[in-house]
Length: 119
Image (tube, rainbow, N blue to C red; front, top):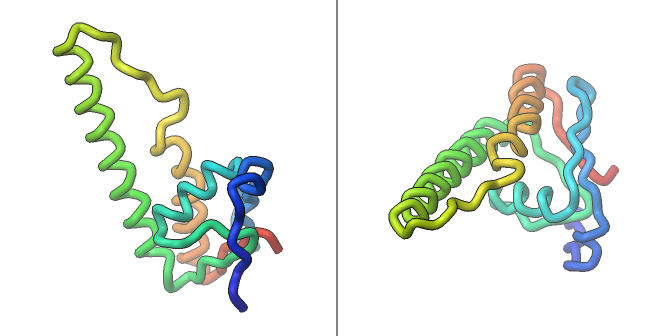
């Protein structure tokens, strides 16, 4: 069953609640959940599922995105320092934002349980 595409206005008000039988819920605000789904190669949607077989690739994609984000942050910090400016600071890093979901995926993959949202 195809998932409904989420509009920008809906994404602002939306909250993603990733659920599984084997782990505590992971909750993200709409824009953050949209970003994470795009990192996983998915379009944001009000409902969805991550099957256990897809979790190793999803974990790897998120880990790679974290490394790229940290490298970009370091590059911007170096550029700002060289220009004599204050480096921008992220309030919540991508690593902090996706860590609970990565841990959820590891546990669910190990136990063979899917992760769903919007259901």
